[in-house]
Image 1 (spheres, helix red, strand yellow):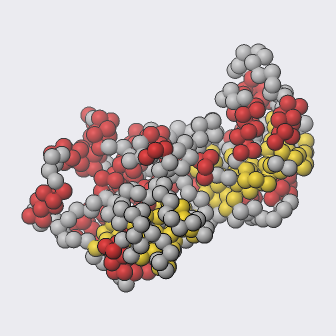
Image 2: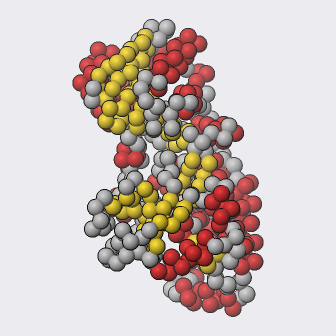
Length: 476
């Protein structure tokens, strides 16, 4: 949706609640409200619970602005318009680690509990209602708040289960990574699917009897009932706000107890077990620091293949924001825990396979934007990843260079490490491949491809003699 007002662009993921829509104008994030939503906003702004959440940064900064410039999709003016603070980088729940999803769920419940105690509720319970400032979650769906009606259940319970609780249960009880499940279904995991996974003794695992099997049974029982019928039955049964609050506290207690079941992967201790010497690491750190200070401070840095976050932390000293991408969920979870202990607000760790990055998803494939659409960085770090993708994942070198260059904004910088074929790690990867299968994996070919798209500013041979660092300007 683009309104007649020049420069106004709708957020593709904001259409499910017709009472309010998020859009962008003049670099600002705005939310248009219809008459009912505007009334709810005024009550919310005057409440006792909402301002403290804003002040604590648990709900995104929000303030009213003049609404006469903007129009709703039907051409009518919005009853009110709000301006939100812009989150540094938009991520999706299937890019989060277990600890991130758990903390996001707990914040959602904390916000809901405060709202219920003050006579409000939230219309939904989606994980997409949350984003991040570094490792601090923030609730962004201000349009979800509305006055609570006594005797009515929390309307967001099903969404909360499908996009937050069920994924946590999968990893905590079964040791199954939840990310592929959430990526495959934008609305999350239905209770009917969960029920089939938790049979036999698994039926009795914490949270499963009530939130999986009972939930599924209730869904089936009321499949033909209207929402009004269900609400009337609950009111007759004596359902109250106090019972709703008690239910929220029980879910909080359950989620606090959940911990991931996982085996340590090859990547868990990679920084210690890889072939880097102390001299290589020191030279690499100096090269990265110099690239970060070679021009104006970068706004966004992408650290691709971040592992334990060593270079993401260096980048955070100079950049406004760093997105640290690593494919192993357990490694990202450990990085998140470490950054959380440091209260790091400028590094966002994400789970992603660089050979299979997040595509566009949801309605028409644009409701949730692809990673490539969201991530255009002022500086891209691609350290010790080229050989893993080119040899380990069979990605042609020309396409790999294109992907790295395309991740940079025009005029941005790329810092990339090329691991020579005779490096111990490259030899280990090549040993698992038929001889001669990667004839193009050569340093001269890599340099040729890089120079075709960039201006190479600096290069440094690491002391080991089998790795070279390059700093290049895209489009130079």
